[in-house]
Image 1 (cartoon, rainbow over the protein chains, first blue to last red):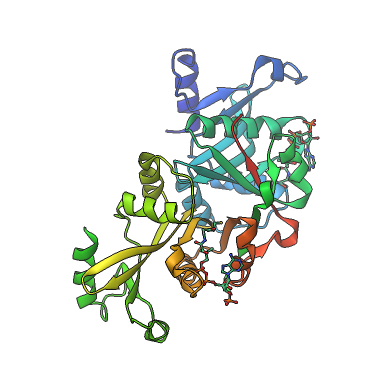
Image 2 (cartoon, rainbow over the protein chains, first blue to last red):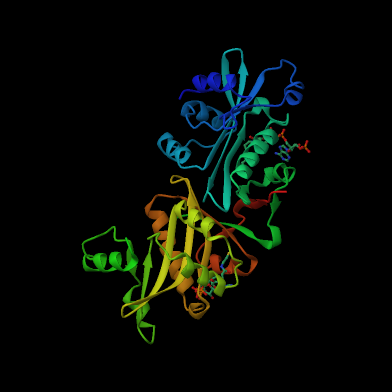
Length: 174
Length: 174
Ligand SMILES: CC(C)(COP(=O)(O)OP(=O)(O)OC[C@H]1O[C@@H](n2cnc3c(N)ncnc32)[C@H](O)[C@@H]1OP(=O)(O)O)[C@@H](O)C(=O)NCCC(=O)NCCS
Ligand SMILES: CC(C)(COP(=O)(O)OP(=O)(O)OC[C@H]1O[C@@H](n2cnc3c(N)ncnc32)[C@H](O)[C@@H]1OP(=O)(O)O)[C@@H](O)C(=O)NCCC(=O)NCCS
């Protein structure tokens, strides 16, 4: 189902529908936003891949084949997106996804907030949304691999580096 | 399909069937084994959960609900098992699994070799099998979280801890 179709149909019944794929940021939060656009979170997967590519370009990530991005989104356990909604326009301003065994663990990948929206608590709000979704699925072990410059960002959300000496390790084909 | 049914039917056609779910360890390797049992690797998922629990018990891992173990196996991208085959008996002696987005990354979990078989290169052989399978699926970023006492084990296989300062981080519900 297209974004708007789902957004409008679920908005109407948001109060009664607990499994709505969309959630609005709390009034308290958007109250701090001078032009009071709505910030909406979603777990819908039908994200425009070009719009996602634009977002990743904006933070300088190297391009990846859209065919593989599509496959990765299909096979992620959770796909979370953050949207600025202004009138009947919407703009993708944040993204994150997680792989999982659906039982014990999840690993978060590709966390990104558009530079225009960084430093305003949006990344934290996106991560809170992701963690809430993973918790609701009874995933008890949430992991990620953090670039050195964002270790403190994740630390503010309660992520611990190398707990009890556990080391993140990488292998690349050779 | 049951283990034996698959094992015998694929053994017969092993030479022609490239997608057989079973693989025998090379003759060179088993030649070092005094009683020359066959060591067999498999990606079949229909593992007896009690046999798996026994293997995990043997290395002192804490028990997990079988319902969740079943779900985790179902939703893992790769499930690898290692068997000792002697006559018409088979014994589960090693296990590993990986979650993945089927495109870019995979994360390996629950690597275990039965204590009776440790220190003989079996863990390395199991990991080689896992890496070969992941490579054949064009996964380019293979990761894991290593307990402090096994960091060197993974290092011998080419895994790097914290490459370019990337930190493994964990979050637990609170
Ligand atoms: C990392 C990123 C997602 C953070 O999003 P953001 O919206 O700017 O972060 P927030 O405004 O929600 O910040 C939340 C907290 O983290 C801190 N923080 C934010 N970015 C940080 C950084 N790069 N380093 C250290 N702390 C940071 C903030 O000070 C804030 O702390 P506080 O709660 O004590 O006030 C965003 O900067 C981004 O997309 N960066 C580029 C892509 C990237 O590097 N992703 C991570 C890949 S591993
Ligand atoms: C870790 C484990 C899978 C290794 O299996 P194994 O069959 O004993 O390992 P191998 O005999 O194949 O050893 C391969 C190499 O790693 C080294 N190695 C093995 N175990 C090691 C350890 N605990 N610490 C450091 N190096 C180790 C070996 O010396 C060998 O090195 P080499 O190739 O230079 O000779 C096994 O010991 C095990 O199941 N342990 C308990 C469960 C566990 O801790 N799993 C990991 C969870 S993160």
